[in-house]
Structures are given as structure tokens and as C-alpha cells.
Length: 312
Ligand code: IPE
Ligand code: IPE
Ligand code: MG
Ligand code: MG
Ligand code: MG
Image (cartoon, rainbow, N blue to C red):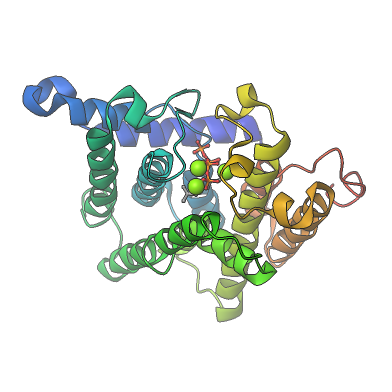
């Protein structure tokens, strides 16, 4: 049986070690130390690490060796960190607390935060394109770069963020498909990239339907993750979440609780989560960590009537 706590700890330690290697010591560059401090402040020892854990768990389920997973795991976490720095800026969500401490622009300043985000984004692609750090077949290396570029860019996360911003300034009612589109792009796209990048380099020959199943799993899980984030913003505890709550309503954000109400959002969350797990049904015991991850990171809410029966 999998010792899941240990699994998470060992993979997170690996990731931390790898990330440290990629981030220069501020003292080595005294004149630009502020930037390097902001990078380390943002990236190291921070966050739940869902996306890198998904890279590892998917890759391992597909028989990919761990040393081939460090680079994509780190690259995706770096993109995620950049998105959080920019998401917190006054021009966007204007949030002062992130991961239990001052957000980057508060701890440093706006210019440093913008540049730190920029640097993290290019560092992600530098890592993926470095054969020493990303020892993959050249074609698969390019495929990873492409998936990450595409899913984080103007048709993926960045588009999701502009749709999120556009909605908050608008007064007309939101349609359900638009709400789903925002969440799929701003959050699920990067989660999908994590699963796809983990899968690449597999020594197994995967059938097309199984590749599609993994993709659908990731999209459902990503949508769940943002619905849960929305619900937690409405009713969660600031200490546990390590960020301010109640911000979505203040900013008139397009959210699931805002659209469906809390209880119905909880029900949708459960249904979608079950759908995500169903997409993994073809996998054997090798998917244990992936399943455990999905069940740990998405939790049923107490107010949801079927919460005790659906997920066991
Ligand atoms: C926060 O992501 C932003 C969303 C996309 C919901 P996480 O909840 O994964 O943030 P960290 O990495 O744990 O801080
Ligand atoms: C963030 O969504 C999505 C990205 C950063 C791409 P949110 O704005 O809801 O994330 P939090 O609540 O600030 O963590
Ligand atoms: Mg936001
Ligand atoms: Mg935000
Ligand atoms: Mg949120």
C-alpha cells in the first residue's frame, strides 16, 4: 500500500532541490540581488505543489523514470508561481497575502514583481530546453515545450486571466459556458499541461483513447480545483488557505458559488470529481498515487448532501 504522505514529501523534496539549483543566490549578483531574492522568496518552500505532484504521479504511472520528470515538474511550478505573482498585482486581483506571507509586490515592489514573473516564465522554458536538466528524447522535449507554451499562453492560462478580468468589470449576466471557459483556461489548462508533460517520454505505447482519457481527467480535475478554490474563497479559513478570503465577491469575479450558489457548486464539484476519477478507470495499481492525489487535493464539502456517499 502506498504511503501517500511519504510519497508527497519525497517528491516535494526532489522538486525543492531541483528548483534551488535553478535559482541563483542573490549574493552572487549583488547589483541584481533584489530580483533573485524575489524569485527565491516566491518559489522556494511555498505552496501545495499540486502541479508538479501531478507531473510526477502521471509520469510514474506511465513508467517514466523520476529523473525525467524533475524538469517538467519544476517548469510547470515556475509558470504557476509567475501566474500567482501577476495575479496578485494591483492591476489584477490586488491581493496582499499569498501563501501565508506578503505577496511579491508587497514584499518587494511592483516593478520587481512584474520582472520576477517574467523571469520565472522564461526560466521554465530554459529548463525544458536544456538537455542536461531535461534528459528527454529531443522530440519529446519539444513536445513538452509546446504543451506548456500553448496551455499557459494566449489560448490557455493568459486568456483565462483576461476573461476573468473582463468579466469583473462587466454588468451583464454571466452564462454558464462562459464561466466554465474562464475556469478551464485560467486553471485547468496548466493542470492539463502537468498531466500531459508527465505522460510524455513513457516507454509504454499508449492508445489514443488512453491519451484522451488522461487529458479529460486533467481538465475535469482542473475545473474541480478552481471550483473548490471559489468555494473556499467564499467559506474557507484564511489561516488554512494562507490567503485572504471573500475577495471574489468584493471584486465581482465570475465564480461557481456566485453563479450556482454554494450548495449546487458543491454538488457540481463532486460530480465532476467523480467524472475525473472515471477517466482513470482503465489504469491499474500503477495509478495509485495519481488517484490518491486527486482525492487529497479535492475534498467534498460538509454542506454537500452526497458528500459521504460519492467518494470513497
Ligand atoms: C492557486 O493555486 C490559484 C489557482 C489556480 C486556484 P494553488 O491553490 O495551487 O496555489 P498554491 O501553489 O498551493 O499556493
Ligand atoms: C488564479 O485564480 C488563476 C491563476 C493565477 C492563473 P484566482 O485569482 O482565483 O487565484 P487565487 O484565489 O488568487 O489564488
Ligand atoms: Mg485571479
Ligand atoms: Mg487571485
Ligand atoms: Mg481564487
